[in-house]
Image (cartoon, one colour):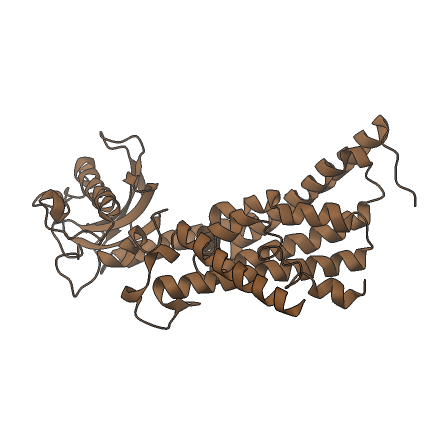
Length: 196
Length: 200
């Protein structure tokens, strides 16, 4: 597989949220607004890239039987670093994402890429895979957050598009996340089918 | 390099090595961020105090007071005028009655019981409903929902649904009650502590 394909597969063909339906917990939980979705996606991307690099570096030093605990420790380390840095320099964002930052540890996308890709490929391809999948995740979360924010409160990235009182509140709440996600997946499936 | 065999010795060494490096890395990052984190929290508190109080010269020494009702002690930040007398207090009050539990509110109350301002510090209320309390109760154009300038000495505040004078947030009466509970707690605490009314 060439590197460009390796990079772009995370966006549409193997988009972790819209196609593989992985990582649903942060997807539904943090996408109340576009900016929250984007920052959650970027935090996950950072963890994904760093853990992919480290895991592909140490893949030969870790005996097979203990690889999962070793991977989890690596991932948890990077998540904690993200959490502390965010708390120090972006306290407002840290508060709005709060609980979901530590939950990146158990995000199945991160462990899934470590197990399925980084532990079998070179450092370079693993880093590119991490960037591709991570940005695909961030892209999906931003779209979903944007749709929910627009329908729910009439804003995108806090820029008012129409007055807030006409917004459908349900889209800001959890059920709206499911509804919006369902429609987006339907659209993506339709587009993918047309191409095939 | 060939993959290491899964022998007991290799597994112990690999896991030990991974955890050792991970904890060393975390220690370093913790050292680097501990100060900015404390500073950011401090700044938030100072900003909140400045936002809820009007016209004060300097801040007195903050102290904690445990009200007779409630299990947590409440932090009080007295504000002094140029002569060093306490003219108002910023009270870091709380309630557990929110729709999603804990809410923390900084309330500024002057010596004659007038609310000079408030700021919601921590909450987990529903976005778009209860989360509006940061702006709802300070809307100067809607006197029925504005708590700023209201006097607490006439009695505790309650929502109009409970026979009070404050209009609750539309579709978020529970959050509104919780918010007023925190404000009332701020006033009862400052009254109980007694220092606000003592003139030396």
